[in-house]
Amino acid sequence: MSIKKIGFLSVFLIALSMLAGCYGKAGPVSDIPHFTSPSGWPSAAAAEKNNEGVGHLIQSHWDVAAPIFKEAIDLSANFPEPYFNLGVALDGMGKHDEAKVAFQSAKKFGADDPRIVKSEILMKHLKM
Image 1 (cartoon, helix red, strand yellow):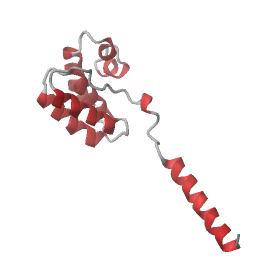
Image 2 (image 1 turned 135 degrees about the horizontal axis):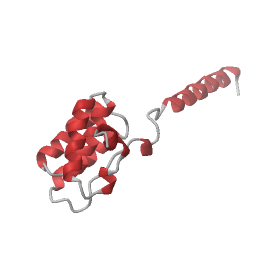
Image 3 (image 1 turned 180 degrees about the vertical axis):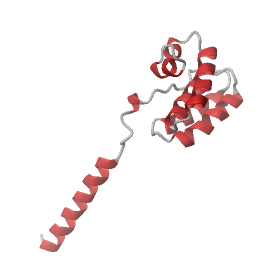
């Protein structure tokens, strides 16, 4: 192999390793609290929107996820998961007062769901 090819290969591998090191800096998916739609939710369109928003939420795309969760809420106003996920997105954007309102709705509509009512981020915002 020529020195020119070795040099190119070295630069390519260094660039590739740097790119790989930058990928996923938001942390593992499990670090971002989120809830996908339960199967059988009466509004399939709302469930689909919630899951679409979760796809952005787990990538820390707060500003993309938030309006998608609002669409899910508009389609099914008593659906607790998008309220919870909206609260997480708003928290990620530093909009804590708005996040609190979203978490209050998540608690109201998900009162029988311990995943929601016992969530650390919800309890923090609601000072429970």
